[in-house]
Amino acid sequence: MNRKIQLTLGRHEDQSFIPSSVPSTHEDVKQLEEYFDKLLYNDYALEVGLCPKRRRIYDDLFNELIRITKVHCLERGLLLERVKNEYTQWMNTYEELYPSSMAYGMRQNLYRLQEKKDLEAKINTLEGECQQLQNELERESVKFQELSEQVHRRNRNESNEQRTLRNNVRFLQSQNKKARQNLENTLNQLLASPIFLGGPDQ
Image (cartoon, rainbow, N blue to C red; front, top):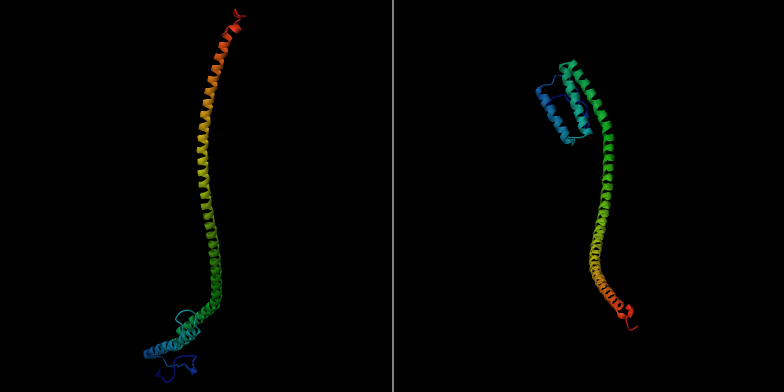
């Protein structure tokens, strides 16, 4: 900055910035903005997330803006300082909550990873069991097919044997009937013979 007295408050890299009671011009504010951007760039301040360097530089800028406002209007500068104090309290609260939130998020992430591993192991186990059951089902299906074929052949053989037995029974019954008729005829002839009738030869 070209002014004899620097505008920015605070300390940065062993440089002291002394407040001035002289009202700032448009050119002074433009130079302040350029200097502010330069500090952010040189300190490698992060653009997102919590960054102590960025916060310190913003606090210095805020203090200088409050000083500039107070020079023009004290009441407005006090209100702006009140806003800055509230903002500082919020930031302190957020910085306290951030580590605990990160720790909670990390724990949840680790828990989810462990849960994912457990589920993957369970899935692998169930897939192995399913494959084992599938193989067993295939073996039992083959056995069932073989047994079905055996039963079918047995039934077919039994049908042939039953048919043969049925024919044999019918043949024997026919033979028995013929033999009985022959026997009855023979007995009738014997009974009708003169021997049983008491003929003249007695």
